[in-house]
Length: 227
Image (cartoon, rainbow, N blue to C red; front, side, top):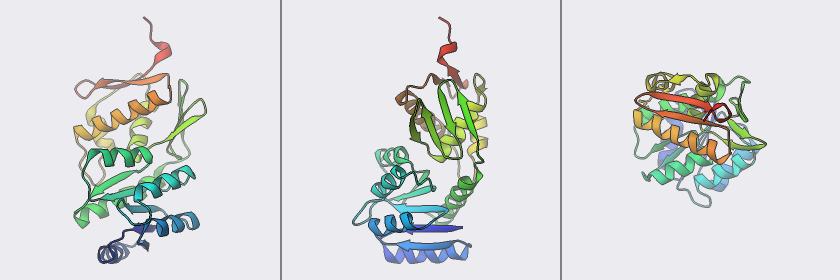
């Protein structure tokens, strides 16, 4: 598995590269956003680790550029900033996961393992419910020709919904599906449900997610609702 690590703190970068290589990864290092983007555009990687705060170009700018070019390589964002707005912006731009500094190395390794495994898990599988299409392998949600990139957990959750339209999915089922090496909490599930609801609405999908954490969530096709 080949990774790109974009981290401008060279001592930290060298330490992370050494540990990742010991774990069997082939790792390239970049020390600013421009160098990272050049490598991504010219080479193929199984996973990208991007620090948000980098010289020349931020990790978010690099992420936006590669997603606009339809490069769907899984991305883990590293950030020293803990504000929810940073996490939301990164996820909306197409990041698959994020990790706040300072972090424990074991957690970084667990997230990288989950990231590259998730990137290789999706078979060519398309869900079509109402006017809404989910391409799980491309991590793309589309309605009437307009599309949005989804994060890995969003794809996992929406696949459950679109594979079982009209059925109630309990909180415990999401926890079981999403629990890799990290703890999945009720707050996390509700946050991703909120992201999915907003993205479906922004695309004018004729499906919506009803329900709550106590009773479960259901994907409803609006055209089938009788008033």
